[in-house]
Each structure stands twice: as structure tokens, then as C-alpha cells.
Length: 134
Image (tube, rainbow, N blue to C red; front, side):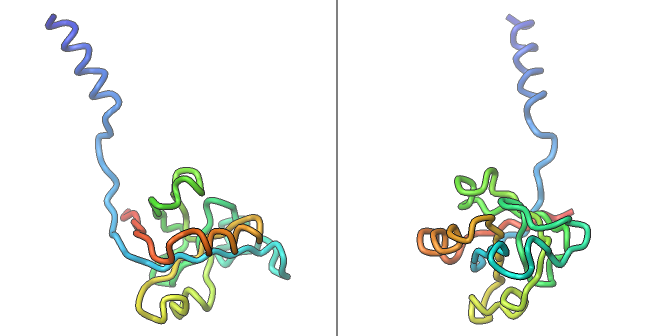
């Protein structure tokens, strides 16, 4: 019995993360954008990004450096694991226009322009955003 218990303990320890991600949580306005229909194509402000990626790229206020990782739990079913990376900017997020200046705005890139309207109508305007601390 002790051997089985030791074996089970070892298995549990092997799959238990040794450290949790630390994050700062914000209630933020979430918007969606697509470049497929305009002159920008998939270009983004972060030169290291190599272009906008559906389910990964997010435009954010300059308070969040390029490469900042974040989670938006409410988007998990829509965008894989709900994890994103700041690769873009834009006047709307910089001026917090969609939130009337009262909250951060995170603009999530979607490949299909039709999804911009769909998600904007179906999803809540404000969601919890967990910005991962490094």
C-alpha cells in the first residue's frame, strides 16, 4: 500500500505545476478587428510579430509592451486557450475610445471580417483580462 501511495504521489507531483503564472487583472473593453478588407493586410505595429494572427494577436494601449502575454478567459471557446500576445496598437485602443476613456481597450484580431460583427454582437463588451507578469 505504501508503494502504491508513493507512486500516486509521484504522479500527482509530476503533473502539478511548480509555479502559477502571476498576473494583474483588469476589467476591460474587448473589441475585435480584421485587416483583410483594408490596405494594411496583416501588418502590425510590432516588427517582431511577423503579422497579425487569428486567436493570438491583440492591439493594446502602450502601457502594455509588445510581447506582453494575456489571458481573456471568456474567449477560450472562441479563440483556443484564450491566450493572446500584444502585437499591435491603434488610436482606438491608445485613446481608450470604445470605453469612453474609463478602461483599457483590448482589440482582438480575427481573420474573417464577418467575425468582427458576429463577436461584437454576441459577446459581452467588458471582460476580465489577466495580464501575465514576467
